[in-house]
Image (tube, rainbow, N blue to C red):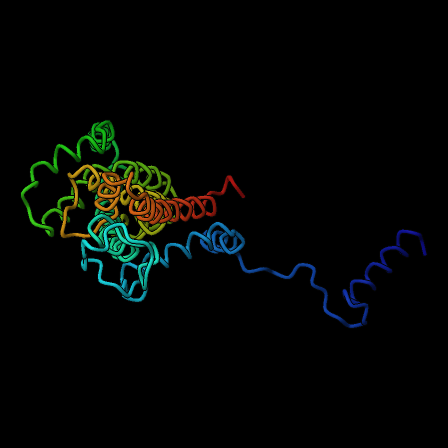
Length: 318
């Protein structure tokens, strides 16, 4: 037997023995593996990313705080007694009291509801506008795409805070619910452009795929192709952008409330409390620091979560 035949026979025998060295063990070479989807690969990367878990934990805590504030603070945030003005920590008031004698910690906890509600509803309305505009522009193209792209450029060139201040001046006499709805609508109609661009780019890429051509050959109409085939494969990048935008909307609401343009009392908001704490900062800095810290951690949590999801869904970073 030649040397080549000897080596081949020994390798064949080792393959039949298997990795454990026992005869008759089945070989694992050539075993087909189940293909992973993009979402599966992204989830595998997210599970190994500590930033994702830290930001997700912060988001869950803030969401629970907004939904069930009584679980986090036992005192009534509207129970203000002037005799406790700038008093130190006592009882459930772990950060003491502000200029009006209100529990600083309780107001910071209850302020999460308005801020998170504005952020979530603004992001939802922004997503609806962005999906509709981006889908129509990317799918039909030509003059429709040209017109909608110029509209996106025009809105994108408008400074968000400046335009929000101008528009919200029109509802300065409205009640709490009116002002809340106005802030949500204004932030949405000024902040949908980036998400719309992302959706448009994803749709342009997706409409050239084979499954779209197969749907056309089977007689599917434009609406079915757009909403049943293209949209599910174009949402992931938009969700990432909206997650980051949610944190930006929360910060924008706090800024507008701080300037006296957004939410106003009796609504409890971080921006309102930061403005009140700024006025009396020399007497006590705690009423300014505590709501500012709540706001900063919430915005940071959503931005970190969006960045982690973006990195997981970006094939260039694999």
